[in-house]
Amino acid sequence: MEKIFLMEDDAALCRGICMALGTEERTVVPAGSLTGARQALAGARFDLLILDINLPDGSGVELLRALRAEGDGTPAILLTANDLELDEVTGLEAGADDYITKPFSLAVLRARVNAQLRRAGRRAVPRLALGPFLFDFDRMEFFRDGAAVELSKTEQKLLRVLVENRGHAVPRSTLVDRVWTDGAAFVEENALSVTVKRLRGKLERDPAKPEYLKTVYGIGYTWAVGP
Image (cartoon, rainbow, N blue to C red; front, side, top):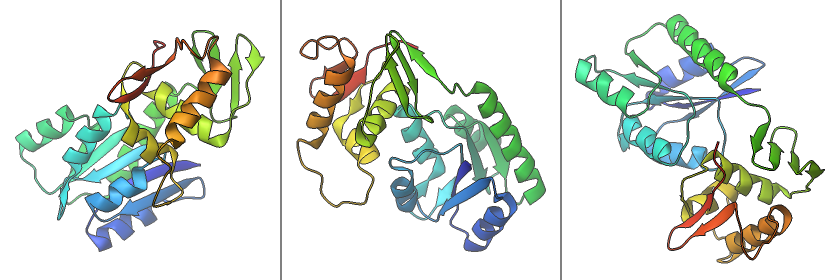
């Protein structure tokens, strides 16, 4: 099932896009504001982002920059009522993969969406090999030196965020937002530290001297294995 995220504050246009893109194999998750978008994206995975540039409480470009800074490489299409070349350049430099000016045909949008999903499918790697590890998040299968490792759902979420952002320090606050997504208003202060400790115990040769899941003091954690 493909998942598309749509941020569009025009309710009528939002409904039209959802109807045009939604199928039995594809779902569209909408949000009408930047605040709503951040809540919907926290901890969720999408195959494509469609972001309106101008919203009452912010900008799709602002959101896209933040996602790219966090290492999120999900393909993104920007929607805008501005047809100025400078706006298009700004959007593309922020990390957009495509840019569509309003008004547009839903058939054209559908074609652009299909093109991005095809490209993303060709780039997708179903099994990720990193050093002595082999991770398959879709099948929930994890191996170290060929031996299977059993991970809890929370450990899988944490590991996925870290390896998708490998080489970059991921702040503790970002990890908490991405891993604990059940809507709980409060997460125990040490929940992240406990999960990191358990994950190290399962993946590291010497958990006391981690080679891969490293602490970045004053910031958070990073996965140190290169691509």
